[in-house]
Picture (spheres, one colour):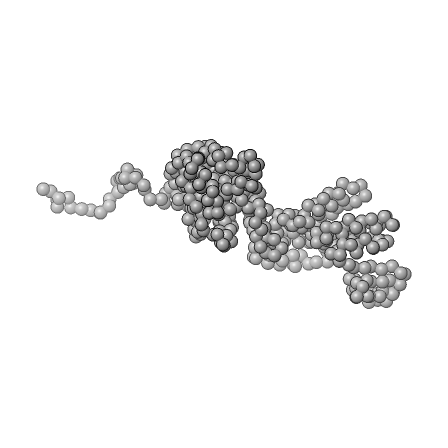
Length: 392
């Protein structure tokens, strides 16, 4: 800030720099002062006689504006908010959106959203280099946020930034038709994350034996205390299983290892032929399975139907905290996703994209004698043979 004027003008306007007070004073008595917003109580003592600017408003303390705004009344001074939007996962996001909407709706205010390249003083070559650099690093979220001024769902802390509704979500009936057309090639799984207090989550999915493609088909997300008892949940599970694949013997179940009470209650009172295993993998290092899920999304090995509303919501909002830790919240269906992949013994994605149904049918081994005979019909297996050798 002290160098925004060339030396000639600094001398003309008698500019004095006070680095300790972060103040630029002018010969006519006016000044520009720079201060932080962390000490929000200090903001109550300012006298706003001219334009006030909140720079990088998303990083301001939430209470700063509450104390400072009254100072604007002294001279009816204007207030400008400047900065990039916060991530949707940040606590300041709703506050930022609310303030932006308040400005837009005000007849005295105006709102401008422009990308950085509209700045005529920055070269286009710089933006091209920066874009290509961030693209190589897989950090295009930075480009979207810092240079395009767009709202990014989770930014640098997002665990599944590649999740895209247009790519990874398909209609339920479309996915079910794909599966049932060759249902013998698919294995069916249901995963339980029992919780009697907050949420009882259940996820239904299928994996293709040959292509290793996984489709998450449906979900249960019960947060009402009256709806998340084992008896109620099991009835819902039976309905969904009968709709997807009625042969219960084709299904494999898995549940959170810590919920032994669920297994005991199910086996004692509600067993309907579905065997449910206990998940004991990834107990201390779930990051491995989360990394696998990212690989599956990137490689085209994981899809979900439009019934998996809460699963998409959890994955879309899933982000580390400011310390880089994964918070234990809003992850019930993500946990069931991990349990299910363990039950599938899914440890890594294949080296190439999933094959189409036609490619899979062509490459897979024949599974019946009749199919083998049909495939061999008319083929000379041993070349020319002298049949007289076999005359008896």
